[in-house]
Amino acid sequence: MLAGSVVVACGGCTIFPAAGPQAIAVTNNISTDPEALPYSLVRLTPSAIETLAANRPRFARVFSSHPGPTEIRFGVGDVVSVTIFEASAGGLFIPIEASVRPGNFVTLPNQLVDNGGNISVPYAGSIPARGRTPVEVQQSIVDALKNRAIEPQAVVALVDQRTSLISVLGDVNNPNRFPANMAGERMLDAITRGGGPKSQGFDSWVMLERDGRRATLPFGALVYEPSNNIYVRPNDTIYLYREPQTFVAFGATGAAVLGAPSQIPFDQWRLSLAEAVAKAGGLNDTRADPGSVFVYRGEPRRVAEQLGADVSKNDGPYIPVVYQVNFRDPAGYFLATQFQMRNKDVLYVSNAVTVESAKLMQYIRLVTATANDPMVAINNAVITRNTLRTSVPQGSTTVTVPPYQP
Image (cartoon, rainbow, N blue to C red):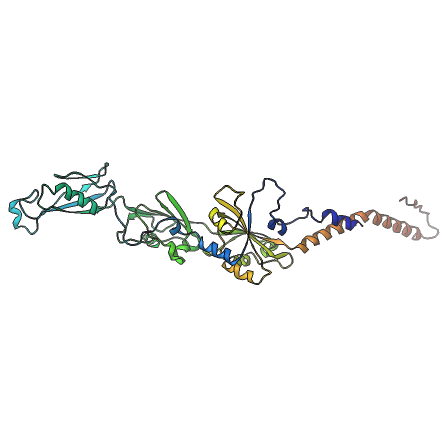
């Protein structure tokens, strides 16, 4: 009768110790806190895997890539050379006696692009140079001289490049700031010019800053995914830093049962869910529910919408998403090998229902034993009294044992 009452009273309660929520609470979005953060449950399917793969962070998605030669534009502080040609001697720059020279041209002293962004050319005045290419500056000089010189032509070249630079900083062997290559170079080329990363690649991250925008990827994403190895542009800043990728494992995993640390490093640049479960010690055979393996992550709103998640309850740019994979289904293991973990993901394996039932039965046995404790004391007292009465030898001093009063 007592056991039945406890089952009825505690069948749906959450008073028993546990490493996390029950599976039914996660799948049904049940929370005892009215102000709890709302999240969306996404079951792992082939279509969900394809959506995540298509939206994997990429530099090319954040920055426009311009393949081929880099367009160099002058900036304040650059030093340029200007050479002016005339069709024949006797013009504005070439005297009559210069006809005996091989070529009718004059090279002006090197010009510094001043704070106003201009260079000075005799008889042409101030020529705008900042933000313009050599060809554009050449055409401006010709336009300014064409009515005074004899069929003038101009050649403008960059002598000292001081503004169109690329900075490679951070955890590299040779942090440097060097001129952009007019032939064009990619991210890995620029990092190589900086001496390459100091640490192992799978622990390194690459941040690219361009025109006030930033994006960060693991260094391995540049090596193994060519689409991320985009062309750099003048005034880009590339920053490398070391931060081991980790995930956190809770619940009925082998590592949690053995008392191992729950924060587990990737030790590689990319880690699948199947590999993450293995690193966490696998599923505990006596506790885990294979159908209730969850990964907690914040996804961009656009990605969450494509996954079919309900984003109406969240106003921020990132939506809390809980992915569920069913390891009772053999196909779940194939999906787990394709699902890529991300830095700071949370892996949670729920207890099986039978584990919660076993906790309940243990609680019932504890309550029943506690209720029977007075009867055990009475029985022990009676046995002790009878033993004393029968053990006193004849002729000895009488030992009076008072009767037991229950």
